[in-house]
Amino acid sequence: MRTRAAVLWPGEPQWSIDEITLDPPGVGEVLVRMVATGLCHSDDHLRRGGYPEIRLPIIGGHEGAGVVEAVGPGVRRIRVCDHVVLSVPLPPCGDCAPCLDGRPYFCERGALLGQGFQVSDGTARHHARGQDLGVFVFLGTFAEHTVVSEKNCVRVEPGLPLELACTIGCAGVTGWGAVLNTAEVRPGDVVVVAGVGGIGANAVQAACFAGARAVVAVDPVPFKRQIAMKLGATLTATTLDDALPAVRDLTHGRMANTVVMTMAAGDGRLLESALSLVGKRGRVVVVNVHPAEETAATISLRNLQSFEKQVVGCLAGSWDGRKGIAFLADLHHAGRYDLDSIVTRTYDSLADVTTGYHDQAAGTIVRGVVRLSA
Ligand SMILES: [Zn+2]
Ligand SMILES: [Zn+2]
Image (cartoon, rainbow, N blue to C red; front, side, top):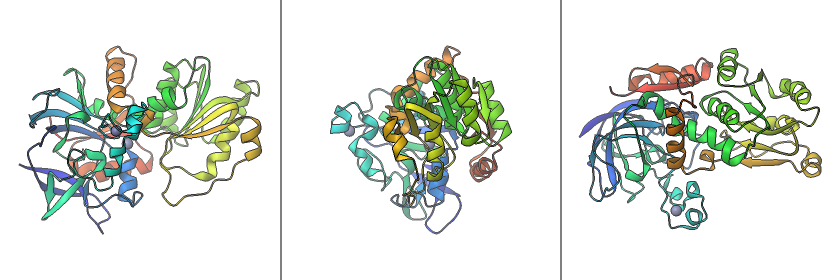
């Protein structure tokens, strides 16, 4: 079939809206009519060359939701007309060492992410300008239709608005997972969330849900700090250093249990400020993507050792995305998860992807969503 997608071509600096040819779904795959895609920072990192290991041309987007229009041979769980939210980081094989170790997000199939073709058999379903197109994170949600593994699809109730639910796939699962799984926030903790974008806004809600007695949201943009307060933050600050006296007061000098780093891009120069905000056995969780070439950070190693401080990375919320999506869809249904306040702007067509990232860089949105079909 013919459809349209936002493609990143070698040597072209911006997303190109191309008409593409899409093959029918193969074994274990489904054709999804995309209803909406979220605009995650990682796609902008990709456009800026932040993932040199990923082959171009590629269809962007990895935060999507839609309606299944066709299923390939051998598909058992998903049916035509199902409403689905697509999961990241990959459909796990279930058999490799990380999968067996309970870490499906580290599945060894991840080695195929760089070539970007179908996770099922390594061939392409998407084509344009006489070339095979990759799909970012095995999804390629910047498209009006895409073909993905059925294992990437989490069925949700038809009543859940897909233009909100699409953001659960990456921002929701990552923000909540970082707090619940990686940081292991417990009732009574003090949590700092650094950066109120899509992931940070989710992390603030997750920290409240987990029972944090104080949630400090850090962001230089006043409108984002307001959203954080609406989502349950107890106080805000413009920078990590500005948060220091407030956290000290809140904790009688014992400092926070956790800092979750969810900024637009990581910056090693801020790591010491983040570590200064946590107390004994405090944990700094690095969720934001750092530039590929960044290798340095200056921190007090003495404090790290003496106070058993921890710096830990977090990929996709240390979670099986499918489990995270189901959890959050249920939470939304129960009225315990505010998606409306996170999606601060919805754009009307694929051509708005570039505008959306422009707005994101200008700090005028928390999470932008592009509507791809009705
Ligand atoms: Zn993402
Ligand atoms: Zn595996």
